[in-house]
Structure formats: C-alpha cells, structure tokens
Image (cartoon, rainbow, N blue to C red; front, side):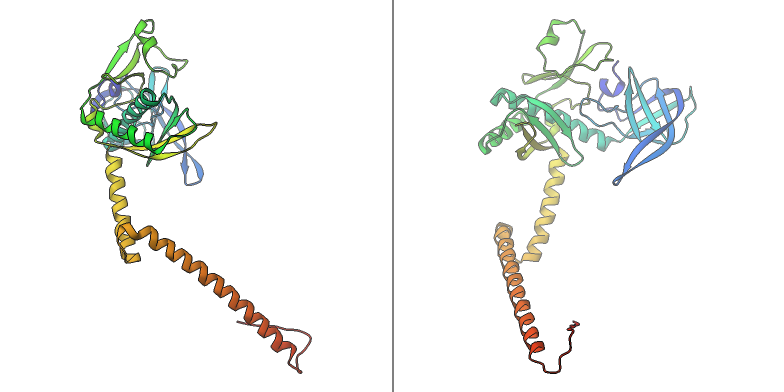
Length: 317
C-alpha cells in the first residue's frame, strides 16, 4: 500500500479521518536513559506522515493540534503515536514537520545518487547506509577510497544536480520483468501490492519506500566530507546534502571567526598557530615538572639538614 506521503512527497497538510485510537506506550531515549511515555496509537484512513523504513527516519507533525511523536508501519497501516486521544471517525487535518521531511528527502535522494555513481564509476556497491541527525553515512564494499576518487565522485554528483535530472516514482507489479533490472536490497516479508521504484532519469532505478525529491536540483548541493575505515574491510563515506551543506558552512564560518579572535591569526594560519600552542604547552608542562622535582629535592635536603627536625615531615601548600 502506498501512503499519500509516498504519492506526493511535497504535500504539507492533508485532511483524512481517524480509523482507530488505542492506548499504547512509547519508549523514548532521553539522554542516556530510556523513558516510557503513555499515549495512543492512531491509524488514519491515509497519511502524509512517513513511517520509518528503508533507512529513513519517520516524520513528525500534527494530527489536528496533537503532536505526533512516532510513526511506524504495521503491515499496510501507518501507526501514529500521540499523547492525547483523538475521536474515531473524526475528520482531522494532518500537518507534516516540513523542515524535517524535506531534510530527509534531500539526504535520501542524495544517498541514491551517490550510491548509483559510486557503483557506475568505481564498481563500489552500497551495503548499508545511515541517515544521521547531522551527517549521513554510506557503507561501501571497498577497503578504501582514494582522495582522487572522492573528488571525482563529488564532481560527478554535483554535475548531475546542476543538470536538473528528473526523479520519478514508478509502481510495478511484483512479476513485472522490469523489477529484475532495478537496484534492490529485498522486500520486507509483509510487503503487499505494487513495487515502488525511484527512478533518477538515466542514472539509477532503485526499489524504495522513502520520500524523495522530484528533481535532483532540489538537492542544491552534496558535499562528501570524507571516508573512514568501516567494518569487515568496508569504507564509510560521509556526506551532507542540501540545507545541511549550508548549515555546515555557517557553523564552520562561525568557528573560523572565533578562532581568528582567539588565535589572532588568519584562517590559513590556524593549524600552524594551534600546533605552536600545543608545543608551547608541552614545553611549559615539562619545565614545570622539572621545577617541582627540584623543589622537592631542596625541601628534602633542608629537612635533613635541620638539627631540630622531628621524626615526621609535613608540608602544606
């Protein structure tokens, strides 16, 4: 079953009706602890709030004026957890937290694009990915990526974005021969209905349930922050897409200005300035330790040379 959020990923509000409302509990992480929140699971006739799946976190939003804290999928249904009950049969307006939704769309479509080009350019298959709160990671089936490969991949990615390549959704029956040609990591055991394909024109066709942009230009830009060694001889590719690139640039500039003020040097000299400071601190620590040892020797000698010394020695500082 396709939800309204999958049929129109850009819809921000939607009127539907409440099918069921049952008491429920939700376990949430607060800091390092898990807390249990009492509330209600609501099923709607349809929804624009995406239930987590395909590596994409769930949407947040409102049912009427009631905040939705979690959306999960149970078979063909989306289950919305709220802390206040909503009357069954009531017609309600559902609103999506658009900033969160669009961010997920940019990161998820960005992942599809990176995965496709990493495969076509270098033969590196994606084995998993993680949409993080600040940055996302793609696990590639290769021991490492060279800097030149990262640069070439990033240039190719952003060239596709500038080319304004369309992204479309296709629905295929499970026995359609075209299904065999698309990229896929398999279907969930309880899947029913047509197969949903995200098609980046001329670039990639991937089986996916997530929400996506309708054109690569909506990604704005993608920055590959770098790669690091992953598990089982694989490589983790770290990336930002869309508004996250802008926020990263803003944070970086703010940090740069603070360092200019603290170090009294230009940005190009920050590394050298910090290196000098670290060496100075190490030298001061070494000198301080030497002085403390010399003082200890002198104090001990003074104690030994004191004819009126007792059997005990104390020193208060």
